[in-house]
Length: 339
Image (tube, rainbow, N blue to C red; front, side, top):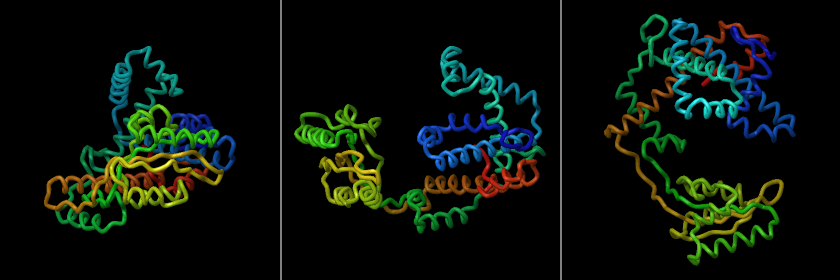
């Protein structure tokens, strides 16, 4: 046992299950086994997630829902999940791949139900224990306009994009040939580029058949800025070639193969093709209804996060957590509620 959070024990096995069920953690697990520091960081993240989950569910129970109603909703949702996955046989495969039993799945449904109910209550999206909403969710037009001006001045790419401000961007396709036998990889990358340039083969098809990465979308990237192209070029190729290419190439032009480098040496060969060049855009007018809808959603989401964090810290302060190091651990990490 690692400790106690509320009325629940935190077990070492729970942390391993959290790693197996969380994609971002599971992908790092094998590599972490060979690096003690990486393993400790992984276990620390799993512990944080598990503690948040347990305490958020515990907070949900304090809302006082009828246990019979919770059980009935859990049962109905479980049956819907079985049907959604194609019946009992297919659902059994899902459970096995998720390292879960049917009761584990039911428990997760109930936990999600209680956690979501608590989040909706403290943010004002639903009534609290008194049966009334305790949070005013109204956002005035003046508040929205102030947010609009803040987002226009923001250094955050996401904030500026929300109001329609976009820098000049490009879309590329990328083919990656693995580093195995580098001379062969380089020769293959050169040959594939030549086939695509002469029209002998479709570049997207070559990517799907030969690329060691980015196959799913035929190597197509999301639109990215020239600044990002510079960062990628310097980090991946130790040069500005991708940036210069993105800035001046014509649609359909090719770049590469370029060697990708890292501290451990060469990682492979990359070939790029410019698919689209998007001009910079100005901010959308504040008066547009769509603009105000975007702003309202973003501002409200941020307010919800702040209210949830505040209420979670308050709940943590009056909840039994043992040993003390676990409470300190959560408080150091901001007291963010589980999801």
